[in-house]
Length: 83
Image (cartoon, rainbow, N blue to C red; front, side):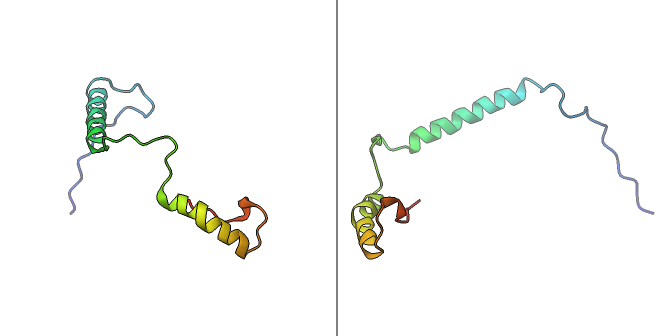
């Protein structure tokens, strides 16, 4: 015959008071480590607020006018966008 499985004691219902202590301290240390890693991985050069990727600049300056002329678009909003 199959053996009976040992049952775990019932836990308190969900929605009770959150435990304090180990979990909150653990989250704080985990977040601090991630923050330090971001600082190390980030380049020393700070990006300007007006920065746009090269492909986006090229698309807006070269391809949008070509598409507007080729497809006879009358409004810039009719041209497909890059996401």
